[in-house]
Amino acid sequence: MTISRLAKLALVAAAPLALAACDDAATTEGGVASGEPIPAVAAPAGATWTDTVTITPEGGYMVGNPDAPLKLVEYASHTCGACATFAVNGKPPLKDKYVSSGVVSFELRNLVRDPIDLSIATLVRCGAKENMQPLSDQAWASLEEIFATVQTNQAVYEAASSQPVEQRFVTIAQAAGLIDFFAARGLSADQSRACLADTAKVQAIADASNKQSEDLKINATPTFLLNGNRLDVTQWPQLEPLLQRAGAR
Image 1 (spheres, rainbow, N blue to C red):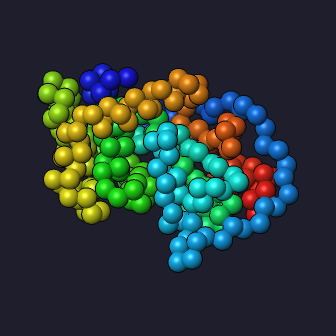
Image 2: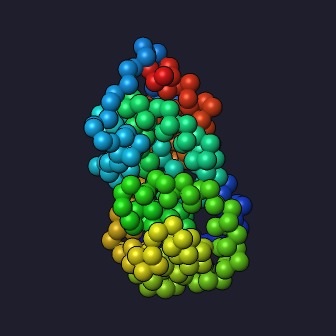
């Protein structure tokens, strides 16, 4: 999907947008085999796995041991309510208990659904790689506030589709209050505007999302993969037992 097409998608209302971005759970492709407990893997001296971030060839941001025996991937949309729920309730225990041990790595990849989603996906990548997941989680925690701001600035948001592409996502982000939101979290307004005006980078995020969605047949968020196998769960209470079954303790 091109960024021009994404930018022209209309936002009818915040609540329907949240629902539209979260489809039914993906079907299972391959089960999780039962495994023996996997011993913890020590991080390099002076480092911790929860502070170790790697950008993967797929454009995802992985936290944890790059060689972890259990590799968990989440495809997520920044305007998906179920993704926001997992960010709030699932990621803290996932990282504190399992990623920190070096047994599980956690990679976040974007499945882009709409212009606000793409704007946030661009902004969380705008600074240091270590900030991508924390900023994503903060945006998910404030999703209702972001939707409310868009509704307040509906005319500005809709007018963005007629602007030159290098201005379009700056206007969308302003209508959603994202420039100020990220400025309060260490990303200056000038940095945000420069990233959103970089059409090549914005298009690259959209292209990666589109290609991986088609290649892997992923059309729902959140979708989780464990060592390449798709799981039929969307939230932490169902996900944790699968990790434990695979050997995480």
